[in-house]
Length: 347
Image (tube, rainbow, N blue to C red; front, side, top):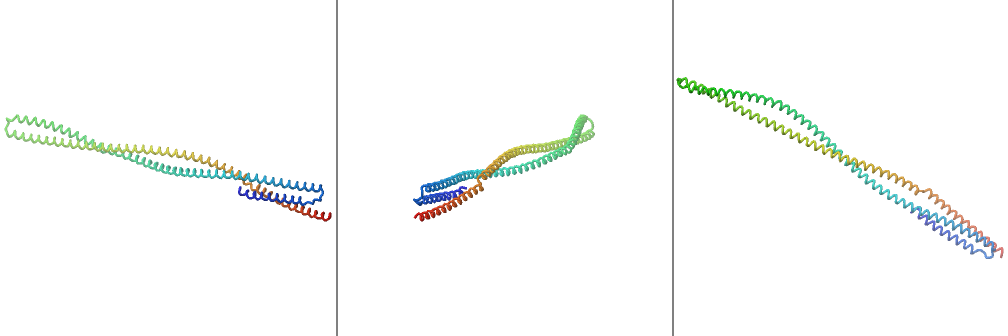
């Protein structure tokens, strides 16, 4: 706008100066070339008419000059306002771009967190399924262990009780046989052959009973050893299953804690995103208000119709001035011709 108004203003000033100089020179020439023999009344009338014309032209020139100065000041003020609005719009656009980038970054991070949360949830679901499967297998193993080892242990306990009873019977039999042996040994007055025969039979019975007792004791030891190994294996299995269940429970608690922390982080990020969205909406509203204000001020600035009307009025004024110049020139030429004719008539 400054560029648009400066050039016509300079031209107007130049035109005004030239016109003022021409009118002044023409009127002064006309005044100086008036014949000295005119009457005082004609001279005064001519001077008044020329003075009135000069005053009208000078007042018109001053009015146009004042209007052009006002238009220049107005255009400069509007240009300043336009520059400030453009700077504000640029600043708002930069802030909006920065906020948009931040929003995109937060949305991308939120999507990453949501994806990681989904993976954690899937892992937890899989872990729950594995835990349930392990518990079911543990219960099945316990039932199988109880069904297998309890029956075997019961059978072995019954066998041990039976062997203990047999050992007790054999011990009693061995004691009775030993008593019989010593009784027979005391009765050594009997014939030697009978004694030896009974002694041999008793020794054989005693050896058989001792052998049975030894075998029963060895079998009882083996059964006790087998029972102890079975109990140790069962305890080791129960301990390993308990440790695995404890580890799975700890891992489950750890994953739940991690999931809760991730949920809190995601909730915080969602709140931050909501705050940024609210702030972005407020900035968008402020930007819309600034744009409306800019458009209103631009409408006030871009009054091309008014400027064109002023320009057309100025052009019409210039045309009127030119017509007045032509008319004044014609009148001056007519006055000169009349003066010449009067001179010839007087002479």
